[in-house]
Image (cartoon, rainbow, N blue to C red):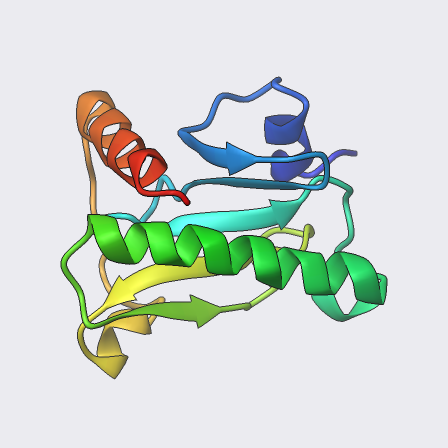
Length: 131
């Protein structure tokens, strides 16, 4: 059975898309730790990030860097935190989370809720800052 992320890649499930190319997709997390919390995934379904082919893994990090720089320009924060947990969805993914303190990257923190319009505005702002 396809992961929820593979279903997003195929268009079966909608997302607030930030960017994509032939190999990767970035979209807003719908259970964010912070405004601008974005997920970056390879389009091919690989469960464990360290099982990815080297070139695909390197590309994932370079694609994430481009997205992180856009988030940093879009959301007031000290840094963009990076996390790879790998337990919640069986599809490799990188969390890019705007943070001001190390505790901001704790996944036990309460998740934020935004309206559809707020998600769309956040996504549009990040998209406008991609170089």
